[in-house]
Image (tube, rainbow, N blue to C red):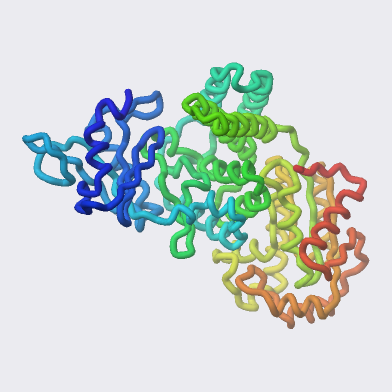
Length: 513
């Protein structure tokens, strides 16, 4: 059902500034597959098209009103500064249209505050302006949103996966069907293997469409908007499946390191680790859905250049969907050294290299210590949080979390000082008991370098100061048998040296790239 057939006069009315009490003002119209958006002044007005699909029904005025109100309420959770209200397009006895005037409601609008299009995260990505700090803020915002989201009865992810595969098969020659068949085989195998994990996962009313184009920067903070209101099966989902869309989008845009950063920061802030074994499947489903959406968009596109772009994107999404389910052997890498050697910087730099996507789980002792105390990573703790008993508790947590993560199929990078030989032996035993490869990296740098780096730290999870460094230097570390990495150089050079040390070891480490 075409919107113009039922809504032509309404669209014409809304295309004039006078409709909004701004005669003479220019109105910019933006068409999407499900809506028509009108931009005027500092406001945006979204009209839902009179359409019906298997997953979406806007076919009547009453249904469009209900969906406008649902969109407003759901998106006020994350973007109250953007969602301003629901407006009625009314028609009087003479047939004249107006906003919120006496008369019959002919249609409904969601009113939003405008924001600069260059503030969208996909635009920031194109300009290489997605910084680590900004992505940490984004992960924190998503974790807080998911924590507050109401529990709901979610649909089975198996049905979502199989519907996506059916859609990919229906594309015929537009996509490589041999790849689709292999994807189906791997998907069914993953669904069977992960059945207990999937059955235990909670469902919450999430965003449902969490990619970079639905995130914007307002007053320096990430804001999630345009969450799905029209189908509960898209939003009553595992929070990790919600997150997977963003991680897949970052990978598709060639930003795997940022994806790994978001993945780890989210897990540091949210209690969702029991479900991470399902993440490769979730990433694959998200990529498969985007492959189908790209082909569907191609069918409606007449411009040859745009058709070529969409076809290429669809093929890349399909290849990614298959690659996410590539068998991966987890490994354990430990990064040790004195405070200021750059352990966390190196760990973050190499994490996205380890498979499966989005890369290794980073277990940083400083972050785990804060988590055990129930505070954010950057919150400073008193000296009592660093006594011997506390340190032993932190290291036990590192070992336990590493063992569970390896069991889930993910690689682990354990980031801690590991100054005691017993600590180094213990983390190596975790790998041995899990039956995976182990590599230990020991970072070295002169005291002058360490002191300079510690003094320059800001908003970091580490509470180590110069006194802590002096204490560490007084300890007997015993014989260091891990691969030594010269850490006095810049972060990029040290990370490359760490990668070289890992590749040069006679262990079967699998790298993602």
